Length: 370
Image (cartoon, rainbow, N blue to C red; front, side, top):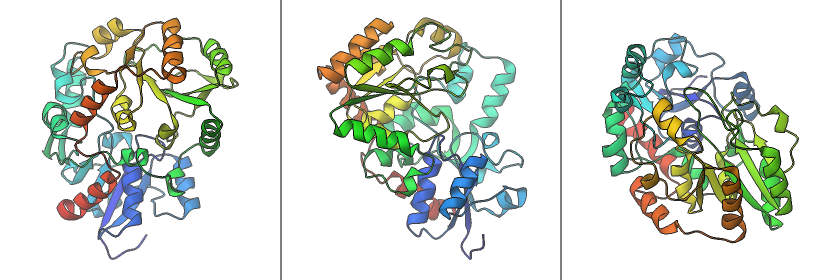
C-alpha cells in the first residue's frame, strides 16, 4: 500500500470486539487526512479484506508498526496482529471493548479474587501507557476507565461498534457477519416471529452453562418452536456447542463473527456479567439476566465494580424454568417492568445516543494523533 498520507494501522478482527472494524470502515468512508490500513489477525479476515478490495497488510512487520503515526487496537497489543513486534503504546488509541461491570485493570489488581503476583505484573503492563482510551460518558470516564487504565487522555467519543445499532447496515458492514443467519432473522421478524440473543461471558476459572448443567438447549429449542421464537446464542470459542448445531430454533452463532449487525433484530437480550448489556441499552429493549453461578463467579472469577442487582436493570433468573418463563413474559406477553431503570442507566453510560462514534474516533486520530 502506497500513499502520501500518514499511515494509521487498525489492528483487530472483523468478527471480534468490533470497535476497530467500524472505525476502520468509517476512515475509508470519509477523508480524515490519513491512510487507514487494517492489520488482520486471522487468515479468514485477510481473505475477506482482499475480496472486498480494502487496504490491509498481509503480514504486519516491525517496519509497518514503526512507520505508522498511530495504531488503533481494542484489546492488548499481543492479542492482535501486532504480537510479533514491540509497540510504542504512546502512539496507541485503545478502543476498549466494552463498559465493564466486572473489575478490570488496576481495580482488578487491587481485588483479592483470582489474583497473584504474576497476574498483577501482567495487568500493570497491559493497562498502562496508552495515548488515549475513549470513553462513552463522564460517568464511565470517572468511575471506570480512568481507574482501570493509565493513559494520557480519556476522550468521550463513544464506541464505534454501537453505530450499527442506530443506522442501516451497509454492504461493508457485513464483512465478518453471518449473512445467512442475518437474512433468516430478518425474515423471521417480518413474518411475525420473535428473536432473543443469548451472550454469556467467559469464566476465568472455567465452567460454562453446559458443564454446570444450567441450561438444556434442546429443551429451549422445543419451547421456541412452540412459540415462534428464535434464540441466537453466541458463546466463547472454548464452549463445546457442536452437538447443538442442528437445532432449529436455538441457533448457534459463530464465536468469531460479528453479531452487532444482528442486535437490532433482537426483541430481548439474555446475558449474565457480559458488558454486551450496556451496548444493548441503546436499543431500549428488555434485558434478562441469567447469573446461575453468581456466588461462584464473584468469589472465584471476578469482583464487580458495583452491586450486581443495582447495576443490571432487567429480569433476574437463576434456573432454566425461570428463564423460559421470563422469555415468554418478555417476548410474547410484552412485559417490560424495568424500562425506566434501563433508560436511567443508559443516560449515565452514554452521553450521546447517535451513530457518529466512529466519525468522532477518526476525527480524534486526525486532530490529536497525527
